[in-house]
Amino acid sequence: MTAFIHVFHSEWLKRKRSFASTLVIGGSLFTPAVVAAVRLIHFRGLPAIYAADAFWPNMWQACWESMAIFFLPLGAILATSLITQIEFKSNAWKQVHALPISTAVIFLTKLGVILVMIFEFLLLFNAGMYVSGMIPAIVVPGVPHPRGTFTALPLLRENVLYFIDVLPIAGAQYLMALRSNNVLVPIGIGFMAWVGALAAVSSKAAIWWPYSYTIIHYISNKPKGARFASYHQLHWLAAISFVLLTVISYVLFVTKKERG
Amino acid sequence: MYALQTSDLHHRFVNHDVLRGIDIQVPAGSIYGFLGPNGAGKTTTLRLVLGLLQTQQGEIRIFGKRFDRERIAILRNVGSLIESPSLYDHLSASENLRLMQLIHRCPASRIAEVLELVGLADTGRKRAKQFSLGMRQRLAIAGALLHRPELIILDEPTNGLDPSGIIEIRNLLMELNRRDGCTILVSSHLLSEIERLATHVGILGKGKLLFQGTVDELRRCRQEVLSIRMSTSDNADAVRAITDDGIAARVDEEEIVLPALTGERIAGLNRMLMARNLDVYEIRTVRNDLETIFLNLVQE
Image (cartoon, rainbow over all chains, first blue to last red; front, top):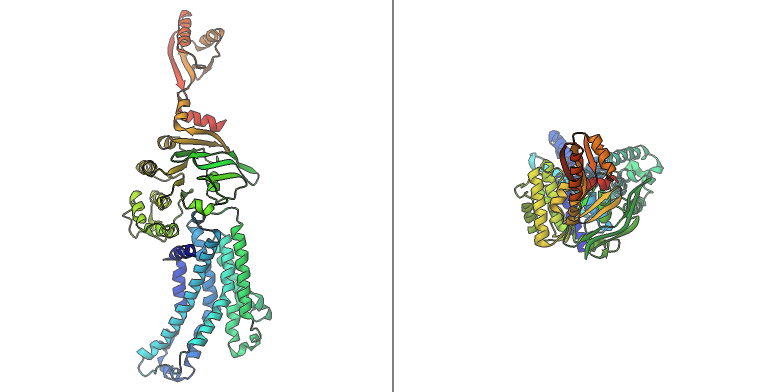
């Protein structure tokens, strides 16, 4: 366990100043920043919006639309591919495999860093959403503080479920990024798979497509998305497909004849 | 006691045997020069030794332990640099070493020590992508030395270094070997470099180990007279006379080439040619220099 923590720390440092870590911060704060900017520009209608009882659920829906459909899946595609590709880009796989650590620890710590970065993505997004909701009330005269409470438990539950729903994307991207020494391959395939998810989401078969779970989750939360309400096992499917993809990745990783 | 020992090491890439029964024996405390022309199989051997390639046939032992059974315990005592440096370009020199220091769990103070050793102490926050090839090579060497390993494996460590950098790295390795007693395995295709640095040499050619021994043993081969070359006023007539005298002679590039002979025999030949009114301009012995030995070995 101590070895795992040290290797994880080492892996965590590798993301410092990397494009992937910049992307996590930029991508997670983009939507809250745009929402805040738009509200500040159109400030005349704000008093009515802020007086609404359902201010925070409405804010949540407004921010999550672009997050669930666009930023979260694409963020996972890019962050996973870029973090994994750091070793190829640095010609460092051979050095990593010549260190006194087991192949399992190498595999799991790198995956761990990716998952923590996705968690960080969600955390920053939530913090950004709260701040963007509060800014107009602070800076625009006449805008009241939002009504209704910022309830933590449903928020936490939704975040955990979105995190589970994005895991298959991270799993699939990790599998591809470990196999290819060209970063464009996993990113290109991931992007096409995401476009496929957008195209397939109107079909019931979308439930079997790992890249579609965050989108289905968002649609299911809307009144018009009721057709997905029966898919209460969506999150289980996401978790199972992530585990399967991770096991396949691991087997391919440890049985590689040439390392680095 | 051998720091590294391979037995009957074979490796085959698709339709091509890269290694054909390599038996390397690197004595503990030595500097072992692993010589061979490009494509001889040096890097493949080193990659097998570090577990970067799966062993197909043969056995690798490091400090007496089988690598396939005790990989992690062995690698704790091994520092390596294989081919081009593995550096994270977006990180500084000390950050690159910090990644390894965390895994080796050696004192953080070692980072500054090894940076000082390789002459990179003043690079500060400069990122590795701004380093010259020589600086990158030094940083990679610093990484190999970080945890004070007992065995250091360096594949072409002076690649990209200028002459003064080569001398500095050579002196550094010799100092480490002398002071800490660590074993150093250095591969190179440059004979002169290995001759100046190593105590032991292994010469690899076409996937086979052609020579293994101390540098002194290799130097003794050097002292052996390979041939005698002679120049006369009429080489063709001289060759006939020498051949009649029972010595195999031939003309090569306007010189007569003779096999190795004793001093008395050479003096006798000189008298005989003079008696035939042939002027002898020059008689010289051609000794086998290290380069000739090396080339002869790898071209056989």
